[in-house]
Amino acid sequence: LASIVIKDNVFAYGSKIYKQTTGGAMGSSFTLTLANIFMSEWQKKLVEEQTKTSELYGRYIDDVFMTWNKSEEELRILLDDANTWNPNIK
Image (cartoon, rainbow, N blue to C red; front, side):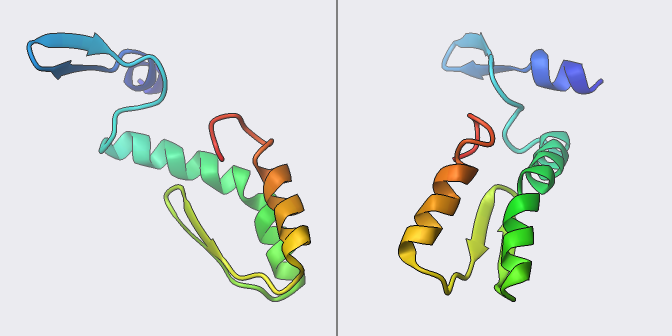
């Protein structure tokens, strides 16, 4: 069933029907669940780093909020690294 939801998603725009080629349907409760599973795995390194220094980390679906008290350069290094973990998440 998951494969059907992800691979066979179609939508209408104007008078034409299109097949979505990447990702799941926006607003689908199943897609939301898959996004949360994916992001929870993706965020493990970030949460581990934040826990070491008692910083805050929060996430709502694919939006991240976190505090940082190290240098801006160290933050840029961490974010540059995080942006390489998956080509679909930046």
